Image 1 (tube, rainbow, N blue to C red):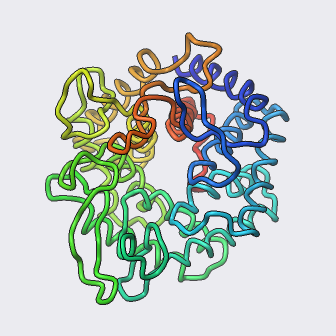
Image 2 (cartoon, helix red, strand yellow):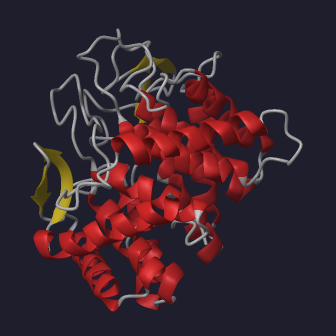
Image 3 (cartoon, rainbow, N blue to C red):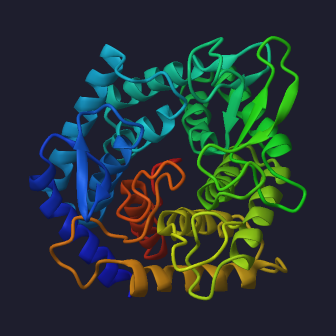
Amino acid sequence: MWKQAIEDAVSKTRYNIERFGDLFPHVSTNGRYGLNENTDWTNGFWSGMLWLCYEYTKDDVFKAAAQRTVESFRKRLAENVVLSHHDIGFLYSLSSKAQWIIEKDESARQLTIQAADKLMERWRETGQYLQAWGSLGDENEGGRIIIDCLLNLPLLYWAFEQTGEQRYRSTAIIQADKSRRYLVRGDDSSYHTFFFNQETGEPIGGATHQGYTNGSTWTRGQAWGVYGFALSYRYTKNPLYLETSKRMALYFIKNLPEDYVSYWDFNVPLSEAAFRDSSATAITSAGLLELLSHLETDDSDRVLIEEGLSKMMKSLVENYSTIDEPAAEGLLKHGSYHVRGNIAPDDFMIWGDYYYLEALMRMEKKSKGYWYE
């Protein structure tokens, strides 16, 4: 099943190279991906898919297309195009860092280190955190951290390994610790975001940007936590990160509906109008594979996690993929972007496609993704 799904994804990605040209897919409307110049936080996922397909096929068509995206990211960083946010890791881990991992291209390595420096500009000394969005002192966004940032931290851990400069690693650890303390709740669910006083650094409280309510659990946020803490454990070997990833994973699995694909929020009232988020399940599946790679074989929760992973991936392939729709642009149906904002609440999401393919590739041992070497 996994091999067939990978080959379907490779075939669709091959067609999409011609469809998309030099533009980048974001989210879709009525099954057609919206395309943009290299200006969005999601553009690295297309680059990552191209590198995954190249690893699987060794076809230069994918390599050439992936290399073109890296050059686009090089230009974007040089011109500082829409980079005043924390998602630098999503952009450059899956583009230039992927090229370094695969080809050991020195210019790609240097570009990725420069991207890590750009992410470090988000550091706020007073509160000791990476501010998610907005400029220093921003009235609305100042003082905000978000759980998504856990997937940007591998860029900083990697930069430390490449340069030996402790500031990268120290920043990532402080952010991971702060996320663990303030974003993860006592019942192993999570806040999407948390605010700190910009002037004093004092904690204010948890909130949401895309979840159902401030106190609910946005499933994609929970997914970022599962994968992000597992990656922080890989880089630091801090057992608290592994424990947190496992706790969040068990919460995710135990709160899934019967078909093992999550709704967009674990607390949203269920009805026929309640949207799924296949992308959250795809992210968590990739995260579970990372988590399982660190758990002892006799861990008491291992069987539950393995069974959950298998059921999630099987449902994605059989019930949510476009494996029987050769003309489809996306790989996973029923992803949600921003339900409360009525932005693509039920369609293709490029990050859902990426993590679905990464999880499939990890299961077939064809790639491990690009969050670490």
